[in-house]
Length: 185
Image (cartoon, rainbow, N blue to C red; front, side, top):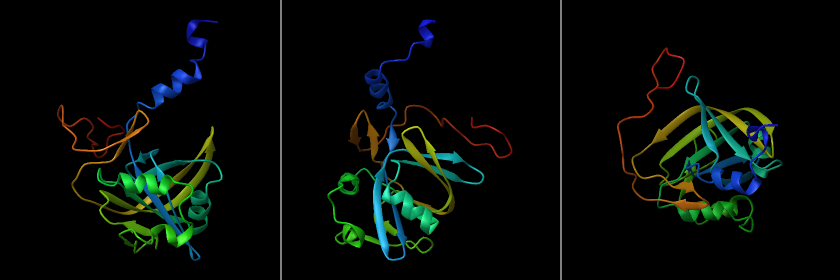
Protein backbone atom coordinates (compact mmCIF):
# COMPACT_ATOMS: atom_id res chain seq x y z
CA UNK A 1 0.00 0.00 0.00
CA UNK A 2 1.40 3.40 -0.97
CA UNK A 3 0.84 6.68 0.87
CA UNK A 4 -1.63 7.60 -1.90
CA UNK A 5 -3.81 4.61 -0.96
CA UNK A 6 -4.21 5.68 2.67
CA UNK A 7 -7.42 7.67 3.13
CA UNK A 8 -7.13 11.22 4.43
CA UNK A 9 -8.54 11.50 7.97
CA UNK A 10 -12.21 12.54 8.08
CA UNK A 11 -11.55 15.77 9.99
CA UNK A 12 -9.01 16.91 7.40
CA UNK A 13 -11.31 16.02 4.49
CA UNK A 14 -14.22 17.92 6.02
CA UNK A 15 -12.04 20.96 6.68
CA UNK A 16 -10.83 20.92 3.06
CA UNK A 17 -14.37 20.55 1.66
CA UNK A 18 -15.53 23.57 3.67
CA UNK A 19 -13.15 25.64 1.52
CA UNK A 20 -15.20 25.01 -1.61
CA UNK A 21 -17.03 28.34 -1.93
CA UNK A 22 -20.63 27.92 -3.07
CA UNK A 23 -23.62 30.11 -3.77
CA UNK A 24 -26.38 29.90 -1.17
CA UNK A 25 -29.89 29.39 -2.50
CA UNK A 26 -33.36 28.63 -1.20
CA UNK A 27 -35.26 26.02 -3.19
CA UNK A 28 -39.04 26.18 -2.99
CA UNK A 29 -41.87 23.89 -4.04
CA UNK A 30 -45.66 23.77 -4.03
CA UNK A 31 -47.58 20.51 -4.43
CA UNK A 32 -51.28 19.93 -3.75
CA UNK A 33 -51.47 22.75 -1.22
CA UNK A 34 -48.20 21.86 0.52
CA UNK A 35 -45.53 24.59 0.31
CA UNK A 36 -41.95 24.14 1.45
CA UNK A 37 -38.55 25.80 1.18
CA UNK A 38 -35.06 24.81 2.24
CA UNK A 39 -31.59 26.35 2.14
CA UNK A 40 -28.96 24.69 -0.06
CA UNK A 41 -25.32 25.45 -0.74
CA UNK A 42 -24.68 22.42 -2.92
CA UNK A 43 -26.16 23.68 -6.17
CA UNK A 44 -24.28 23.31 -9.43
CA UNK A 45 -24.62 23.57 -13.17
CA UNK A 46 -24.53 20.02 -14.55
CA UNK A 47 -25.01 20.91 -18.24
CA UNK A 48 -25.19 24.09 -20.31
CA UNK A 49 -27.21 22.60 -23.20
CA UNK A 50 -29.75 21.70 -22.11
CA UNK A 51 -29.37 23.76 -18.96
CA UNK A 52 -29.44 21.30 -16.05
CA UNK A 53 -28.85 22.02 -12.37
CA UNK A 54 -27.97 19.58 -9.60
CA UNK A 55 -29.19 20.13 -6.04
CA UNK A 56 -27.73 18.03 -3.20
CA UNK A 57 -30.04 17.26 -0.26
CA UNK A 58 -30.18 15.00 2.77
CA UNK A 59 -31.85 11.66 2.00
CA UNK A 60 -35.56 11.67 2.71
CA UNK A 61 -35.81 15.46 2.71
CA UNK A 62 -39.31 16.90 2.67
CA UNK A 63 -38.24 19.15 -0.18
CA UNK A 64 -37.02 16.28 -2.41
CA UNK A 65 -40.21 14.29 -1.82
CA UNK A 66 -42.46 17.26 -2.65
CA UNK A 67 -40.37 18.37 -5.65
CA UNK A 68 -40.47 14.90 -7.17
CA UNK A 69 -44.22 14.64 -6.59
CA UNK A 70 -44.80 18.10 -8.09
CA UNK A 71 -42.20 17.46 -10.84
CA UNK A 72 -41.09 21.11 -10.58
CA UNK A 73 -39.54 23.61 -8.19
CA UNK A 74 -37.93 27.05 -8.01
CA UNK A 75 -34.34 27.96 -7.17
CA UNK A 76 -33.80 31.37 -5.54
CA UNK A 77 -30.09 32.32 -5.57
CA UNK A 78 -29.67 34.64 -2.60
CA UNK A 79 -28.23 38.15 -2.60
CA UNK A 80 -25.54 39.01 -0.04
CA UNK A 81 -28.18 40.94 1.96
CA UNK A 82 -30.36 37.84 2.37
CA UNK A 83 -28.41 35.87 5.00
CA UNK A 84 -31.51 36.02 7.21
CA UNK A 85 -33.39 33.99 4.58
CA UNK A 86 -30.62 31.39 4.42
CA UNK A 87 -30.76 31.00 8.21
CA UNK A 88 -34.59 30.98 8.26
CA UNK A 89 -34.94 28.19 5.69
CA UNK A 90 -32.16 26.17 7.38
CA UNK A 91 -33.94 26.34 10.76
CA UNK A 92 -35.78 23.05 11.36
CA UNK A 93 -37.92 24.77 14.02
CA UNK A 94 -39.47 27.30 11.61
CA UNK A 95 -43.21 26.95 10.92
CA UNK A 96 -44.25 24.28 8.43
CA UNK A 97 -46.12 24.81 5.18
CA UNK A 98 -47.22 28.22 3.89
CA UNK A 99 -46.56 29.81 7.32
CA UNK A 100 -42.81 29.73 6.67
CA UNK A 101 -43.39 32.32 3.90
CA UNK A 102 -45.92 34.52 5.75
CA UNK A 103 -43.74 37.53 6.59
CA UNK A 104 -41.45 37.27 3.58
CA UNK A 105 -41.54 39.18 0.34
CA UNK A 106 -42.38 36.61 -2.29
CA UNK A 107 -44.70 35.91 -5.17
CA UNK A 108 -45.75 32.83 -7.11
CA UNK A 109 -43.47 31.49 -9.84
CA UNK A 110 -45.70 31.41 -12.95
CA UNK A 111 -44.42 27.98 -14.00
CA UNK A 112 -43.77 26.07 -10.77
CA UNK A 113 -46.37 27.87 -8.60
CA UNK A 114 -43.72 27.78 -5.83
CA UNK A 115 -42.72 30.96 -3.98
CA UNK A 116 -40.15 33.20 -5.68
CA UNK A 117 -38.28 35.20 -3.07
CA UNK A 118 -38.12 38.93 -3.74
CA UNK A 119 -34.62 40.38 -4.00
CA UNK A 120 -32.89 37.14 -5.04
CA UNK A 121 -30.03 37.48 -7.53
CA UNK A 122 -31.46 34.81 -9.80
CA UNK A 123 -34.52 32.61 -10.12
CA UNK A 124 -34.65 29.29 -11.95
CA UNK A 125 -37.94 27.56 -12.76
CA UNK A 126 -37.07 23.88 -12.93
CA UNK A 127 -38.59 20.56 -13.96
CA UNK A 128 -37.28 17.52 -12.09
CA UNK A 129 -35.29 15.27 -14.42
CA UNK A 130 -34.05 12.72 -11.90
CA UNK A 131 -33.35 11.82 -8.30
CA UNK A 132 -30.28 9.80 -7.41
CA UNK A 133 -28.89 8.70 -4.04
CA UNK A 134 -25.14 9.29 -3.92
CA UNK A 135 -23.08 8.67 -0.78
CA UNK A 136 -24.78 10.29 2.21
CA UNK A 137 -26.91 12.64 0.05
CA UNK A 138 -29.31 12.52 -2.83
CA UNK A 139 -29.08 14.65 -5.94
CA UNK A 140 -32.05 16.18 -7.72
CA UNK A 141 -31.33 16.87 -11.37
CA UNK A 142 -33.44 19.61 -12.84
CA UNK A 143 -34.01 20.94 -16.35
CA UNK A 144 -34.15 24.76 -16.24
CA UNK A 145 -37.17 26.00 -18.18
CA UNK A 146 -37.05 29.68 -17.25
CA UNK A 147 -34.41 31.87 -15.62
CA UNK A 148 -34.02 35.50 -14.60
CA UNK A 149 -31.08 37.32 -13.06
CA UNK A 150 -30.14 40.78 -11.83
CA UNK A 151 -26.93 42.43 -10.73
CA UNK A 152 -25.68 42.29 -7.17
CA UNK A 153 -23.36 40.44 -4.83
CA UNK A 154 -23.99 36.76 -4.01
CA UNK A 155 -24.40 35.15 -0.63
CA UNK A 156 -21.74 32.47 -0.34
CA UNK A 157 -20.97 29.53 1.90
CA UNK A 158 -17.24 29.33 2.69
CA UNK A 159 -15.29 27.68 5.50
CA UNK A 160 -18.48 26.95 7.42
CA UNK A 161 -19.62 30.56 7.34
CA UNK A 162 -22.16 32.54 5.34
CA UNK A 163 -20.30 35.32 3.53
CA UNK A 164 -21.57 38.30 1.60
CA UNK A 165 -20.49 41.56 0.13
CA UNK A 166 -19.10 42.75 -3.16
CA UNK A 167 -16.75 40.45 -5.01
CA UNK A 168 -13.52 41.74 -6.48
CA UNK A 169 -12.54 40.53 -9.94
CA UNK A 170 -8.88 39.49 -9.80
CA UNK A 171 -8.37 38.55 -13.45
CA UNK A 172 -10.25 38.35 -16.71
CA UNK A 173 -13.05 35.95 -17.55
CA UNK A 174 -12.18 32.43 -16.39
CA UNK A 175 -14.66 30.14 -18.08
CA UNK A 176 -16.29 30.90 -21.38
CA UNK A 177 -18.59 28.35 -22.90
CA UNK A 178 -17.94 28.12 -26.62
CA UNK A 179 -20.95 27.02 -28.62
CA UNK A 180 -20.23 23.79 -30.44
CA UNK A 181 -17.18 22.91 -28.37
CA UNK A 182 -17.20 20.01 -25.94
CA UNK A 183 -15.60 21.72 -22.97
CA UNK A 184 -15.57 24.84 -20.87
CA UNK A 185 -12.54 27.08 -21.38
